[in-house]
Image (cartoon, rainbow, N blue to C red):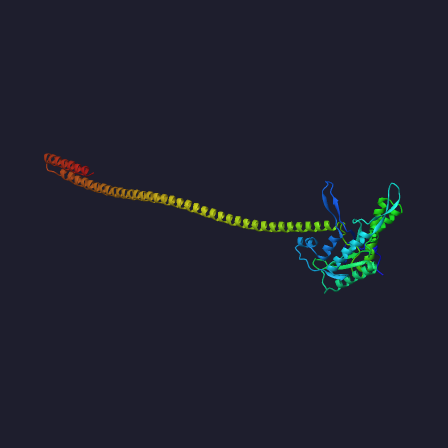
Length: 409
C-alpha cells in the first residue's frame, strides 16, 4: 500500500524529492465555447472535441502549431488503445450522431413542467485525460515503459468500455499520453469528471457556491491521490511537487512557455550583448592603455629631447663660458707674463743701478784717495804758486769727474 498522499507533503523542502506526477482531466463538447474579454472581444475559450482530436492525432496545422512555435517537428502519434486515426475520426462522426439523438429532461420555469429536449451540442460528451512523464519518451528507459503501462492499465481499470482511445506523443520534451473517454450512447460525461461530479453533489445537497467550489477542488485532489496510488507511487514519482505551480489552462501554459522562451532568448541576447560589451570594453581599455603607454613614451621622449636640448644649451653656454674664461685666463697669463717681465726688468734695472751706484762709490772713493794723494803732493810742492796752479788743476779734474759721473746717472 502506498503511503497517504499527505505524508509526502510533510517532507522537508531541502531533502531530495523525486519528480512529481502530472495528470489533468477535462470535459469537452461537440461545439466549443468561446469566451469574451471585459472589452467584449471574443477570445479562445474551451476547444471542441474536434480540436482535441486534431491535437491528439497531429491531424492538421492547428493540432501542432504549438510544436512549430517551440521549433519542434511533429511526429506520427502512437495508438496504445482503441482505433487507428482514420477510424477514430469515423468514431467521432458516429458519436455526434448518437449525441444528436439523445434527449435530456428540461423543466419549464413558468409552469414547472418537465419536458424532453435534444441534447445541446455544447454539453460535454467526451472526457480527456493528459498524463505526462518527467522525461523524454524513450522506449529504452525502463521507468518510462513501466509508467506508460501503469497509465494504460489504470485507464482500462477505471473507465472500462468507456475508454475510447489512448494516444502516445513522442515529439515533445516530455513523453505524455492523451486518453479519450465517452459513453457509448454519446450522453453527457459531466458525472465522470471528479471535480464537476463532486460540485454537483454539493449543489444537490444545498451547498453554497463556495462549498461547491471547495467540493470541486476536493474531488480533483482525490483524483490526483488515486492516480498517485495506481501510477505515481509505483513509478517512483512524488504526489506533490517541491515547488507547485499555479493551475492554468493549456493555452495559458503554452503562452507562459512561449513567454519563458522569449524571456530566455532575451536573457541570452542580453548576456551575449553583455559579453560583447565586456569584450569591446576590454579592447577599448587595452587600446586606451596602449595609447596611454604611447603618450607616456612620447612624453618621456619629449622630456628626454627637452632635457637633451637643455643639456646641449647648458653645455654650449658652459663651453662658451669656458672659452671666455680660457681667453680671460690667457689674457691674465699674458698680463702676468708682462708683469713678470716688467718685474724682471725692474729687478735687472735695480740690480744695474745698484751696481752702478757701487761703481760710482768705488770711483768716488778712488777719486777721493787720489785727491788726498794729490793734496799730499801739493803740500809737498815747492812753492805756493805751483801749489795754487796744481790746486786749480785738481779742482778742474774733480769737477770734470763729477760731471761725468752725474751724466751717467
